[in-house]
Image (cartoon, rainbow, N blue to C red):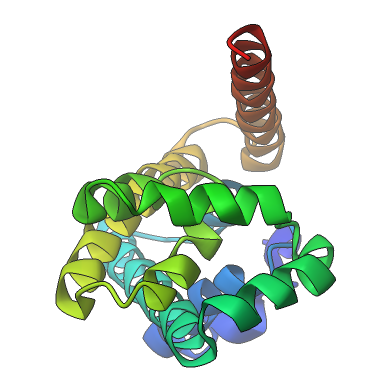
Length: 199
């Protein structure tokens, strides 16, 4: 499908290409990952390919998170905080947002990691404070894998279902994308109103 030509070169490398695409999504957040996953799902031809892609994207998400973990661990708290203050706006992460991520890990590490992988924006940078705090790497990796699987699979299945339907996949995909973006905006607005009402 011509709509997906922009990432078709990576897909041409099969399993490794899909993994690289998922890793890239962790470092270049040009648009929401759920849209990328839905579009990717629309390129899948059969159920075997769906399972293959779910595994590949989940593996790539874990590798990307591990990279952020190692960056946080090697740089340390002070240098990362300074980098966020200086360059965070270019990566859509404010000092306040980063501070909330770090504070979240003072609770249950496993569940914060797992649920964080299912929250847009949070899922990209959550591994950074995890590395700074030097959380248990195995526990972090397992939680990241589980959370990434729960996040990736539904959107890939949605894209695959759209392609397999009798309707125009481009038109249906556009409406699905608009609904997903609208839902995210509504949730974000609701959370902002709730926080302001409780401060």
